Length: 199
Image (cartoon, rainbow, N blue to C red; front, side, top):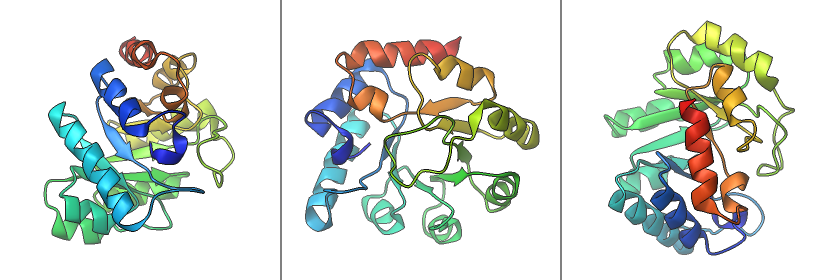
C-alpha cells in the first residue's frame, strides 16, 4: 500500500488495518502522484513506526536503499529490479520476497535465497497499471506443486469473496491493496480476509 492507493488518509488506513489484525505490511509507493525524496522517507518512517507499535513486519517494495536506511524487516522485489544478493549481503536475517510469473522465475527466486514468492496477478488488478494478464488459480496450483512447502503469497485482484479460493489453490497467504484501501469498514474487511485465510 502507498499514498496513491488510499481513498482516505493512508496512515489512518494503515492504523485501522493494523488494529484489525493484518499480519504483515508492504510499503508500495508507486504510480502517478507517488511521494518522492524526503516526503517519501518521512511517510515510510511513519508507516514503519506504526507497524512496530503493533509488532507487524514492515517490508519495503522495490527500494533496497530505503529498506537498508530504515532497517526495514524486509524487502519485496520484482524481476526487473532483482536485488536479492545486494540486500542479503547487507541485511542478514531480513525477509526477502520476490514476484514470480513462471516456473523459471520461481526456481531462480528459491535458488537466490528468497524467503517467499509473490505469485500473480491471480485476478485482474487495478492497483498496478503495468500488471501482467491474470495468471489464474490453475497456475497458482501448478506453482504450489513445483514449490513444495516453499512459502507462496497470492497477489492481484484478491477480495473478501475470492481469498478462500486463492488459499485453497495453494497460497499460504494473500497480499491485498484495494480491498482494504477502498473499504468502508476496514475492520470487517480484514476480519473477513483473515477468516478466509484460516478456513
